[in-house]
Each structure stands twice: as structure tokens, then as C-alpha cells.
Image (cartoon, rainbow, N blue to C red):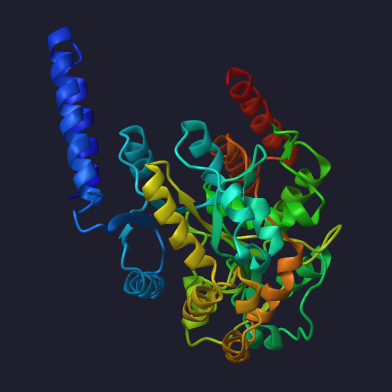
Length: 437
């Protein structure tokens, strides 16, 4: 059953029946019915055979990666007679929030670390540090990944996978432009982008651009810009308060605008900055993305270089995590057994080789199977080496509001606004929101 059906009916009946007291009572009945249906959508009912049937919601993409995950879930189910995990594709935060507010959450949720603050405020997830401290596997987890799980002195999730952002490029286009070395600094990147921008017929409409930048105010734009913010020594949060007008943030945004003014970058379609069509077709020579990209499965020539440095070398992590939702003690303990399996060398080795994400388990990263996998896809070495300088986006309760305002500032700058003014406007908007909390 589609959860959206329940949500749409709730909204419809709300509008129709809120006008009087007795009609509101009917609304309460309708809400209850919908929540019963929502609960049935999740299949959380335990049978009388002693098996705890858990639901896991995930939004893993592309579908090939979901297939890898399902095979690993099947392995868990085959080796555990008392626990069965059902993996369900459930994309979008609204669905999750509907289930949480209706008190029918999944048992395990795969999502982004940046939603942690929101779930903590709702009391929807349970802290994991007590369990993790007793887990022998803890010493095998890449240490800095747990920093993305921390908030208010607690650990709220475990990493399912990780990676980071680099710059993919077309070696043949570099060679044709006479470029023999990849850029190491922002200024070198700017000069390389100019050389790779080619207008064959002189109509001021290049047939080939140096690089693609993501247009839009969504999270992909913010995510893509973050390595430049970090490289400039900038920040967007200080003492849990928004801080967008620092010099590092201004410099990072100014650099993107400089690339635009040079005419050496083209913008993606709105909110489609992750699409690789222009890169694969040779209309752009460089693209900011990570190893999950379809580029690695395409037939075009490609390589990767690290994010060039301004003040320091840096990049941003792209980590997927698992939450244990608050349900019952028995269900939560069963869910923790699955999380232990996810952190294991066995799971991480098979998952990473099957998807291209980096292992979160040190032994898996050092395994012969993963080394052989990297030898066949040497571009992954760039992302492995960058993990030591990779940092997360902020883990705070108001991250969604921060990201929205920051995304608007980036979009405005790409469309011609000065970085200082765009960031000042975003900062003022956020200060109003923070004061009203």
C-alpha cells in the first residue's frame, strides 16, 4: 500500500471536516484508520513463531546498489533464525516524518546524517553509544566517521557507507588542450577551465566548457560547494549558530562566481547538478562528483583529481547512515544485531566491491578483495586518500533551514548577486529563524 495515499486522504479530510466539532471527531477516526493502514504497510506485525520481523526503510540508489543491499539483507536473514529484516525502498523525508508522527516508524532507517537533529528533536531515534562502547567491532570503524553521528554528547547512528567528492575529468580533452598536469590550486583550476573552454565558430557560445557547476538551491548544490568552503578555511556554523558571512565562505563563493565571469563553466539544469550527460557527451571537461557517479560505469575516458586547495586541501564526506528508531526494547535489540552485521568486515567488503562506496570498516578497506577492486578502478585511490582530509556538513537540529538559506545564497551568486550580499541576506534570514526557535 502506498503511504502517500494515506497522506493525501488525511489532507483531504482535514480540509473538509475541520469546520465543526463533530466533524473534527470524524477526522480523528479517519486519522486513526490511515495510521492503521500505514502500520500495515510496514509489515511490523510479529508472528507467533518467535521471530521478530523488522522493517528497514532505505532510499538507496541507483537500483543496482539496492540489489547489492538486498543480497546482503538476505544473507543476514539466512543466518538469523530469530530475526527477519524486510528492506523497503521509501524515498523522501515526508514519508518518514508521517510514520514517526503517526507512531508507526520503521525499525531501522537508512538516511543522511544531516537529518539527525530533526529526528532527535522528535524523539524518534535511540542513542547508540552504550551499545557501541561494548561492541568489539568499534575499533574497526574508521574513527572520523563517527563524528558525523554525534550530537549533544550522544552517538545517534552508525555509518552504512562513506565516500567524498573529487573532480572527474576527460583526459583526452586535457590532452587536446595541451594540459599535462591536473590543477592543485584554485588559480590553477581557473586557468585549466579557461583552456578547456572552446568556442569553435566565434559566436560566444562555447561548444565545450571547462566545468559544470550545479544550479539550484537544493542540497546537491550545497554539497558540491562544501569542499571549496572547507578548502578556504570557512565555516557555516559557529557554536551551533549560523555563521555565513565569514571570509572563508565569501572566498569560496567568490571563486565559483569568478569561474562564471570567466565564461569557463556552464550551469546545470535547475536542481540537476548531479547529472553527467554533458560530461559524457564531451560538452564539459570536468565535473564535481563522487565515485557513485554513472561516469564510472560509462564507456568514456575519465580520471579523477582531488579538490584543488586554497588555504588547505579538503573535501566533504558523503556518508549514509543507519538509525535505530524508537519502538520496543525487543525490537530495538534485534535492530542492533543487524547494525552489528552492517559494520562487519564481511558486509562492508561485499557492499563496497558491489557499489563503489568506500568501506567504513578498516579491515574491509585493507582486505585483498577491496585492493583487487581498486586495482581495476584506480580512480578510487583518490577518494581513499582524501578520506583523511574529508569533513562532514554540520550535524545540528536546524540543518535543513541552514542548507536552504545557504543554497539560496549560492544560487543567487551564480546568477550574478555579489557573494557578500547573498550571504548577508541568508545570514539575516537564518538569524530570524534561530531567534524564533
